[in-house]
Length: 322
Image: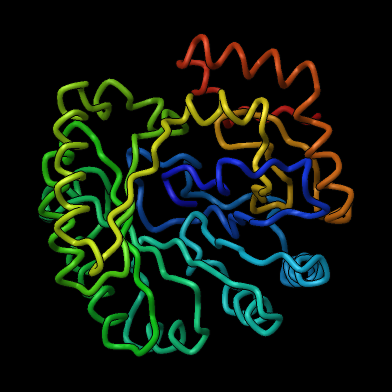
């Protein structure tokens, strides 16, 4: 999954729709890296991870429900053995697909295969204009492989490459140079936002969290870069931090679902609640349960507690089935 919040247009409420507008699907939890800020604490496989038939059955339900847009993440999704089957199926049914990857598995052949899928975008994590900053955050990472992946995708016709940058106390000062680097790599867009206090980021919060002054400088740089690259490359900062997002979603749930590697469906990233299981429930049943769950007193009480005490978001991965 992307380290930034993924949401639909702020005015969109789940209650307006008969099915989701967007699916964020974590295909797997295996990863070749050990990032200090990983929301999902990826690195090992789920014992009950979906098999190929289960994944394709879920894909069929997405197609039948006419889901317009699916983002595939992990872990590292390119390590999922059924990645190409899922992508091919979704694209064959006209569903827009975004891939969220660390980029290190993209070699020349993979770049060609991704281009042939005519994806909405390939989103690559680049957390520094320098090798030192990027690899300090992404343990076992290789900044040079990420740059090379961007170049390989640039060489393919019709590939929209997006760069996502996660600010921390030790790389936030490089955001301007990272935006310039993304532009030099012909990126379609550069996306960033405040660090989320979930998963490993919660455990490493004191080390990772930027200061208020660092964030102030960060936003000033972003404003300047938005103007500098207007009409050439989109520079976008998600306007809410994880607590602001949650406060809004308690009354206006997004028209989206977050699917985990075992088919369970999480209510939202910052909360621990599981509201369905696509292995044993239909998409329609899960969608109805999702909408009902936002009115569950347990969800409302815990959500308000998190808003009042942001440190509680560290419990987001301690799942509670509704």
